[in-house]
Amino acid sequence: MLGLSAKEAGIMLQVQNIEKYYGSQNQVTKALDRVSFTVEDGAFIAIMGASGSGKTTLLNCISTIDTISAGDILLDGQSIAQLSPRQLAQFRRERLGFVFQDCNLLDTLTLEENIGLALSLNHADPHSVQQRVRAIAEELEIGEILDKFPYQVSGGQKQRAACARAMVAGQSLLLADEPTGALDSKASKNLLEIMTRLNRVLGATILMVTHDPYSASYASRVLFLKDGRLFNELLRGERDRPAFYHEILDVLALLGGDVSDVT
Ligand SMILES: Nc1ncnc2c1ncn2[C@@H]1O[C@H](COP(=O)(O)OP(=O)(O)OP(=O)(O)O)[C@@H](O)[C@H]1O
Image (cartoon, rainbow, N blue to C red; front, side):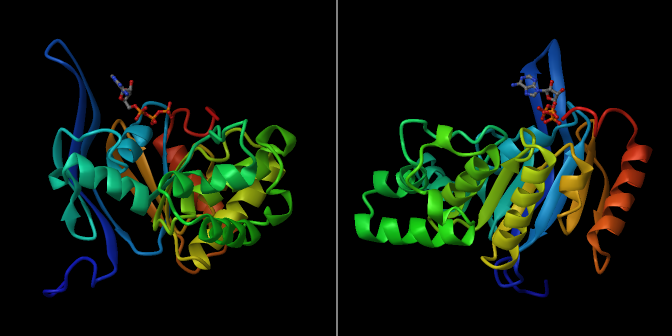
């Protein structure tokens, strides 16, 4: 980087030689084994691997939900291990957005209230909350259904609301764990197109864990985990999505096991 800071060099996240162990003395599981990679600003990265390969553990360590046993994780050049609990909470709130397989929307609130909830809890001005919620909802094509409750909309619309909620405060890193896992193929395609738009238009950096090679083919880079180690990685480059999809299938065949069977 020739003296440039990580931030100046456009590097958002540095995962350096991380290890994660669960359990103690007699029963230790090594969930992550010396994993290293760098994420540039504006990247869209998929993380693949068989069940138990460490995908969720990796995402949980990056999101500070879990702690690493060794190594370091730096965000904008700053080690997250050195943040105080208060700084960590602020970091999660301001920088990270989360989307999970079951979108975790509250059934007693409308989509608009769900999307704006964190801002409202943070005592943001109600008018500005409304403006921000509506702007991102328009971008994600759910502007017309903001007054509906989660049980009144489709699974795909709920996931788009979850994406809106994840990004409404201007968060720059979206962490998604199997976001298409509970959706049919049409709703999955739609959500992946929306995530691509979040990435390209709003500049969100995305890390998405998935079992599904079709979902992974929307990313610009795919990391493959095997037994807690980084086994391989693919860059999409100038290839179109279908060509990238076939290349992902080739790596999965090499990787063996149940990677794409466990959705
Ligand atoms: N809280 C925990 N306590 C003990 N072992 C754990 C814990 N969480 C995960 N593990 C173990 O760590 C390893 C990695 O698990 P992880 O959930 O990260 O895998 P994964 O790739 O996300 O799997 P899946 O695709 O099934 O969700 C597995 O061997 C798992 O059993």
